[in-house]
Length: 128
Length: 169
Image (cartoon, rainbow over all chains, first blue to last red; front, side):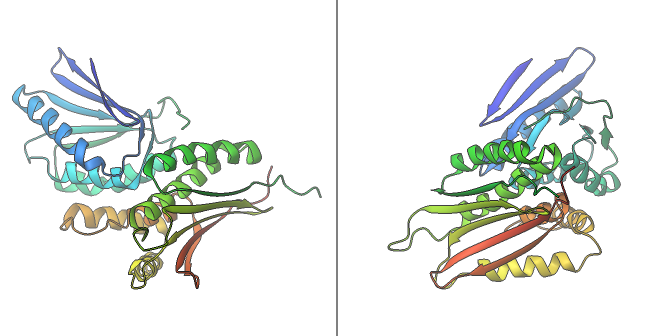
């Protein structure tokens, strides 16, 4: 497992023998221009997972906070996923701000058949 | 009936990104100490943070005689939490018009949640140019509140969010 730090945001990257690359978002994503660092990072991870023919999972359940600039960055990333690239995202419906955001992402499930959104009901609750 | 505990914060801070992150944590802690409502406190912290980020990002600090500072006020009453962020605007500034246009756009939906979903859909399906407006849209959706903005005679923009919290338990 390798942890990448972007200000107060940490992203753990787990490469599993089962053929899954799992990213766990932790902490707070509050950089002024998160796109400048997150987009190249996520692009690299996605290309590497594709080269390995690995499934790609992103877990947001323990993320404490993201600012609106991060919302836009995540939307741009998903929007630019290649059509053949699968991505599963996981969130905590106990966090109202996560539920509102991921509920709104259904539009991508409609347009991108390999994009799946998963609510994790028993995810740990984070405060700040 | 005993009056609810009061929170009153009035700070003028240097307009830097680092201060916003610090203040968000402080606002959440203070709101939690007063209200004992974790969800409300998180939401008030988000509202303050998004308004401060907008002020730091778009404030007209480069004018002669204008300090690079923003002002944050968080005041509770028995039923409301009022968050106000003040920052300088230029003589010709589109921020107030943009703010009002976003409020009008929000009001065109049956609910702020539907506006949020529509904005995500626009970002997903359309060209990604200009400001996202996502800060105000998420404030309205995550913490239903009234939003307004005024510019005073010193050319300071005051953006205010009033959250109805209801009486304390």
